[in-house]
Image (tube, rainbow, N blue to C red):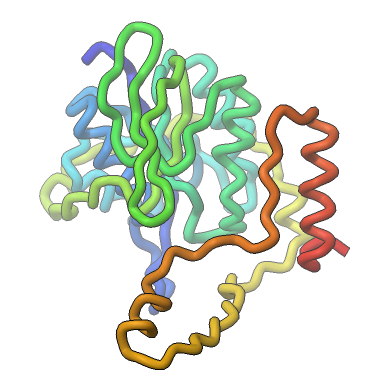
Length: 256
């Protein structure tokens, strides 16, 4: 394959101990990239080149990782945007959300906006790539898939629907090279004044099932959920769509 593919990786954290490790979704992005490009895959990280957790990615069979060296607290977005703009990549893969730092999941969206590329969320598989477009499968809720045709170049996020990453071997992780490059350091002013705390899932309301028989209860428990007050907006202006979203956020108490 002549298409240049780059996978972005970050430093993850073990869900129980919090120890640094390879991020699961980023490892899936590397796995998908290896399946598409093999040894031609380029892996890119913005951060500390001395971080031992980066070698877990090398253990997947990589010869090297390109590192845009930055201190803790630096904004990775400007460095990644400048590098990818000149790298000549047609496909950039990344996890949907970081396991450390802000973990907001906004980086892929801001990166795609800065590059002017289309963004595919929840990439499950790349079926084919030609000179100007790619045919991909997007993961939807309840195991559904949607086939999309995307123009090159594009950026895609992967989650648990992507192929499971291979194990990291000790030998290749020691032999691989971390190639550092000096970049302009931009402080993340928003992160400097922010207060970070562990994310907590929102509680879900339990649906009271009123059924007389076991068969009725099973049917109610496995029935597909349907929204009661949803609204589908088609053919509206961007202003009307934004007002509808803002109204919903206010009603749900997200925005006050």
